Length: 295
Image 1 (cartoon, helix red, strand yellow):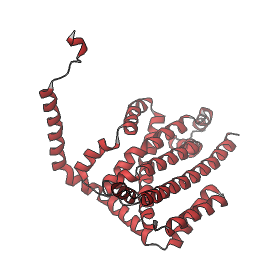
Image 2: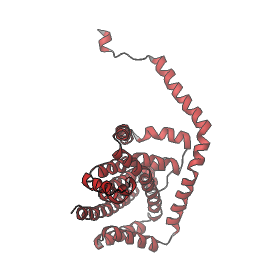
Image 3: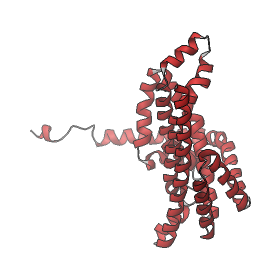
Image 4: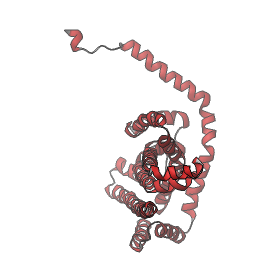
């Protein structure tokens, strides 16, 4: 009866030896290859530092002008452009400009990395059911595993700094772009693909000229979700050495500074709303283009 009540386990000594074996193996791996991995990510660190300094040291009028121009090109909405300008002016007036530029730098680089890595994997998943079968549980794990769990090996390998924070952000934020790229390409009308094949068009040209443009609205939704998830990681990334709006929030938690935490939290919310509206409007424009192509 006791056997039925108490679930059988490996035993304390066996579990302890197993855990020690895993820990010692990873420590040996980090000692042997940690420096090489750091050197591999060094160009990424240099680019991130350069981009952050560029945003911080550039005149605020130029930065706001560029952001307003990009907002207009993406949305074609004057109300959104004025709202974006007003939001950044308020952020600057409340003394959060430099932290906002640091956050903008890491979010931009993280989104770019997610696009460069996630889009090809999404295409592979759409083209191969086997790849999709393998990748799906991996993406599920990346989305559900607690952030602090995968921070442990990252910090053991790379220490505290910008690159570990950037990697942590990418791990958390990359699944949406992979999934929605896969979904968008799978939803492309098969008749259009067959027509391209009948004309003797190569697979690459079909992908580039037919599938990818028609899947763009779905991909843009993935970009939207990737940006939102990246912004949600700002505070956690600040715990491992990433500068930005998360640092004052972390300080406000430690010292119980309500106003400081609320102001910087609202700045993150403002960035999230701006990016969300821009990507949504762009996706809608792409959807109209998709509907025209279908007709």
